[in-house]
Length: 362
View 1 (cartoon, rainbow, N blue to C red):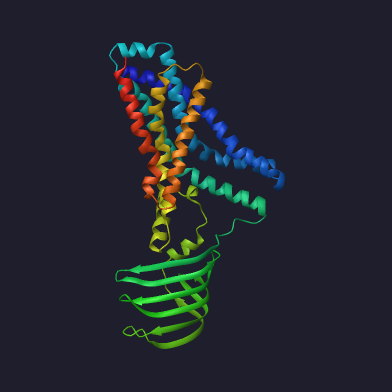
View 2: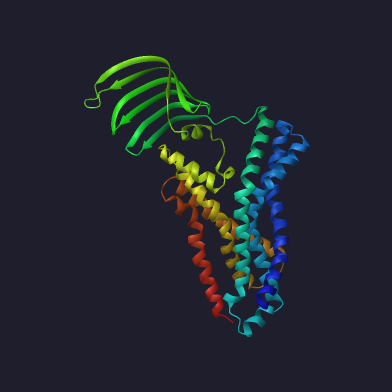
């Protein structure tokens, strides 16, 4: 364990350096430059810009941590190789697998830290940052989402109970509503209404008509117009039309519940399922990055800048695979889980193969 503790200490120093360098690059490139560019159009006050940067820091740290694990491993192993410490450890009988264990263990800690960060700090801070930006740009609070052509299914123990279609929704009420009512899997009534809104625990439909059907023959038996009609529908319908947060602004539990509600309502959820898996896949990339950093760092690196350049190249290739998997998953050409984990399924065997080959070498 003495060797493992020593190697881990050698890794922690470069990790701090990597977090500062890569975090600065990420924040400058993805937050600060955009704020400066937009400030010419929207005249952001300096206090707002600083507030947005601070609110976006947890998000930037979430993406930086796996990359920092890669750069830290590259630099630490390269230092040990350049000073012949790696050679001495190998000659003394230490396998490359055991040599790499502290670095991979450290990367696992980094991955768990990133997951915890994404579950606690990232969602509320990203949501608040988007609200502040929207208000600064439009002068109005962030409005509820406007959606078109909504379809909602209400399923009960006996099967389908209600099928709701709305031409549009502004987040507060539905417009152009058609409700089909079922009993024992048979259509029993059709209701049309100009608007519908959620009030006092139930849905109130305004300015419409109700057509009741004979369940045995589907023939109309009653037709009536109404100014107001109350109908009990699941509260999940209200949650669906009022949810303004993006996947980044929800944790795993919240996004999972949102996906479940959308799926029950008959909505397409493939893209959201990909984002759910990516909340785990992205931080766990730190393990693969550490394995690749072990192999590549064991070769002599002339400087820290060379390690940084190599790290950025590996990250670029990883995110190229990630973009491909995301596109295939979102379009349904791959299952959602496979689209999210595709970079890992390709790069992990490669990393293990390279480590095995390195273990057989002196």
